[in-house]
Image 1 (cartoon, helix red, strand yellow):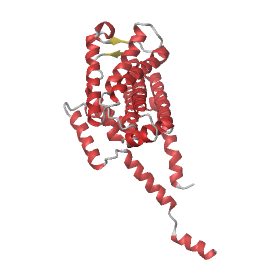
Image 2 (cartoon, helix red, strand yellow):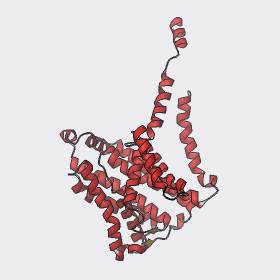
Image 3 (cartoon, one colour):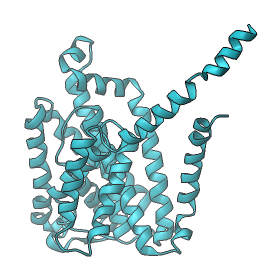
Length: 328
């Protein structure tokens, strides 16, 4: 077995071992465990947006609104209706998915920057609605949520979030490789060509928004159960731009790129919080450098290395080739 094949199986196994024992590696520190939990939650949101924007070609600048809806839905069903965690979390995704479908119906007529502005308006309106609808959402006071008994510690919640992330990556991967995913990609490449091929473009656009919103709503539900609180200021329009930056920095139409971008853009604020006002500057600088030097995102670095290792493994040694010819 050559080196390329060894590395192919070695790195996933090593990553699995690190994740499995991560709480022990950091000494059970709640701070470092919560950071990784936040990375995983934002990775889910960025994966959902990449499904819509990277694979479907529909630009959205309002995904923070879906995060907020998912978080509020989980909080309301858990606290005011007394539903257990196992029911409140899936409902947060279902309610957000339904709203995403309703948003997608009028959005199917929009393209490019017109769609971006429409989704931006949606993202801006959700925090305002949450503030005004105080009888349901608690207004500025927000809603406090009890953590599920089985996952009351950051240690146990870590494994829940990791499992949810892996499971949703598997779901999105299967969607992309299904007939639905191929329809999404066809619409991204050319709506006219997709229509000629018999694809119901308005229907699939609405489905894109619904599926993406459903997954993002689950991320919002996980967030509120981890933090134990949700308020209108938790997910603002800045969050929408941050999630969009994650998929651009990581790589459009790439699942590993979504996770990589989410990890980088989530960790940067923690790394620069010692210097006031530096965080946004660093995030902007990173985005600018990636767009200029790596237009396909950070994932392109790994793809180049993979291509290099593959080409080198398939190259023929001239001496060995000469020996074979001589033997023949």
